[in-house]
Amino acid sequence: MISDAVLTAMLPEHLLLLGIVLVLGLEIAGRGQRASLGVAVLAVAAAAVAAAGLSLGGYAAAPFAGQFSVDPASLMAKAMVLALALPVLLMSRDEFENGEFPALLLSSLYGVCLMQSADSFLTLFLGLELMSLPVYVLVLLAYRRPQSAEAALKYLVLGGTATAMFLMGASLLYGASGSMATATFAVGLGSDNGLARAAVMLVVLAFFLKGAIVPFHAWAPDAYEGASVPVTAYMATIVKAGVLLAVVRLFGRANVASPMLELLAVLPLVSIVWGNLAAMRQPSLRRMIAYSSIAHAGYLFYAVLGDAAGRLQAVAFYLLAYGVMNLLAFAALPAATDDFARDRLDNLRGLFHRAPFAALMLGVAMLSLAGIPPFPGFVAKFLIFRNVMSAGYTTYAVLGLVGSYLGIYFYLRVIQVMFMSADAVVADSGKARPLALGASLACFAAAALLMVFPGWVIAGL
Image 1 (cartoon, one colour):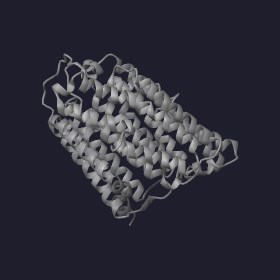
Image 2 (cartoon, one colour):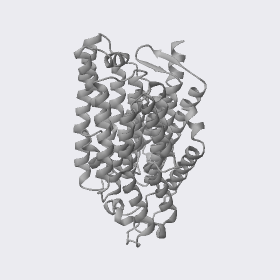
Image 3 (cartoon, helix red, strand yellow):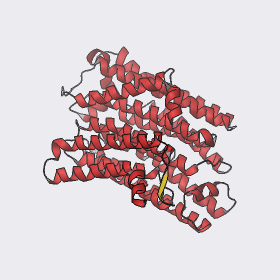
Image 4 (cartoon, one colour):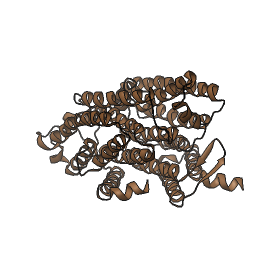
């Protein structure tokens, strides 16, 4: 029956929707202050388990033909993104006391999951907007500094620009092909039709804006710095994962040719170099992570150049390693009464002497993000560049690899500040953070799994 197929295929989305309804109900009843977070965690965990179980069982269905379908790969992508959202929810307890954050995050996650099953540009657009609109509010929700309003406005304006580009590209593809199916994108990649080429270019540029690729990166540093720590962690990991996994699904098994080849090679390469260079001079940890994320977006879009057969696997493992390490860094960051002071790198001086566990967790995260072996970041970068080289683009792979070495400096700078500098005077809040500690331990356990058994994880993606 069609109803059974809808219920099963959309089980992760239904569980998220149930969580949204329960959180809103608790808020209306005036009991959401304590219960909302627990409901959200259970909803996300249940959705992740459901997606993983269906994927491992080889489930595939198309309950809405031409609009929405699932297969083991898309279900595993959903499971991965939902699992990464759990530490964000745990961290949020220290910043948000009411149910607004869980409700908005669940809504955004619904959009992320919808994007992974989109078979038409209509469904993809719906998922993209459902993912993005709650984030605009999240940037402002925990108002900690005057820059938050400006950051949210910049994110909103550039997000609107990306939406306009995406819609124009989709409409031009419809004009060229007569179909709204996402499969027309792969056809347009190899088309000689000028209208189809322009459409494909606009869609790619829209995703460049969403992924913060240079020169469409202007919103990222301000938005990351102005948002609270859980929101920054969400934007740096889950939003980026949702965008890149949707890009991989959109490209499918199509190989890239000129002129799209040059666009997908040059701008990500510029992002790698510029992101790493700009991060070197940042006095703010969140702003440094923002420029770092610009560089990592370059690595991820580089994967589109690679062999189509290994594209999804390389991107998924990279997003998993990158997401776990970013979340580990944010979860381990010590609390402070002053959000501005908490974010300053100078206030991490001598952190190892004040909070050795936090310093060690941050050190592990920095080494992995730098791509130092044997940490998971090294394996992730290896998969990306190996895939690019296997497609015959050795020059681009070498240039990207050289650009990645620039990032080692500022990651090691954080370690030097924490372990080899005199202790700084910091106004720590002294507040116990058991949930943030749990998020740190969960991320560290996931990092250890990725480091010790990378082959097993890669095989499961």
